Length: 357
Image (cartoon, rainbow, N blue to C red):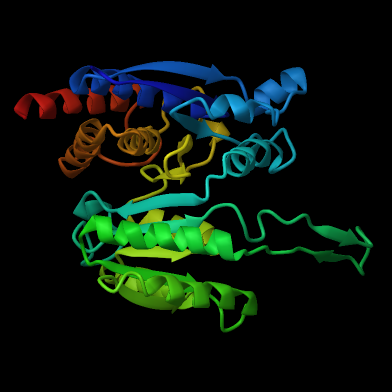
């Protein structure tokens, strides 16, 4: 019997609706090829919705989300609103409400000419970053004293728990084993200066005892950034804190060719999870049909892989890679090709690859 999935869609702001539209075009083709069906549930949460109604995404909606198989998010952010208002409400609302403790960010360069590093291409740039997604400075409430004066002081609390640290490290070890590549896990922290990270150091060593088949490495975050540029081939799976993961994955996105290709999964294994391109809402390009939708299409591939449609996910990833390697999609830059044309090209390539078997 063919499987059926219920997928929530939050198209969001700026170019979000345009890139999501193309991801859904590819979803339609992929579902027919792989033999599954789906229902979409569209949600209105966006900056424009807030400006029109004054309504933010309510906490009560989380119970409805738990009935979905997955969520696809477009992009968020609007210069007409206070920075972070919508982003925090929706993204952190999802991450904390659904306890999406893994932020999964593949860093894979699909074509030699897209790499910014001399002599480093698809063979060298192929690793995954596992970022803890529910703790650190993102979850504390800042305290302001003497705000607006020369003596202003802000205190922000970074929260780390043994449970939160252990579960994401264990996920990363399992991923390093499942990838069957270098079978290596690198833990990135800054325990020499941020002494709270001693929890990460100790937990990594203790959990690692159960994974003798996985090579275990450690790097301070500043050194890790240097090695990502100098020797990206050293990395297989990387696990790190929320803040550092946020930073190094954007560096990773540029290594693979640019923000327009990068996608992420916000995951609670076995439960409703959310997938998104990592680029912003790019309001200056909204409505012009020039945004590159490959990040959203890559996020769709991650979503399909997560729910168990590995063949469809692989076809989409292979289609993107083939189009970029052949330079039929000549660039990841906005305006290189119309947004809808790129979507049609990926859909057609998926059909072509499936026909070839």
